[in-house]
Amino acid sequence: MATSVSPEEVVITVDVNTAKDLVSSGHLYLDVRTHEEFDKGHLENSIVVPYLFITPQGREKNPQFLEQVLSACKMEDNIIVGCRSGVRSLEASAELLNAGFKSIKNMGGGYIAWVANGFSVKQPQESV
Image (cartoon, rainbow, N blue to C red; front, side, top):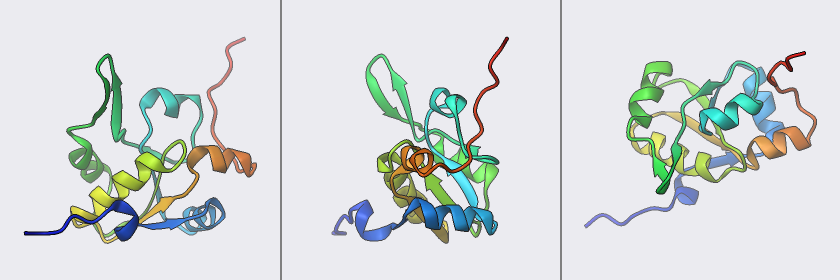
């Protein structure tokens, strides 16, 4: 019987400063927030694939998550995974590693920490 491993035991988490440097050096940034969250602001050149959906029944895992990531990324790509605060991205990172992705890192603190550090984000255009 296989023992289950917690996401914290398999996933490398980096702080936002390191994540920024890695993204600047060519790592892909996978945003696993909902489309609604993403549309309010996101990192430039992000790939968005929601890990969870908000439904009337509560949060539900995206059943197409791996398939959607595979349509946008290769298994050998260097990927930083981020969400709002770092919780969903930790779970998503563990799932990607378990699926065979080679270079996955979780961005600790998520989008909240990115913004708090004053790093550049793309926000929706205000209509006048």
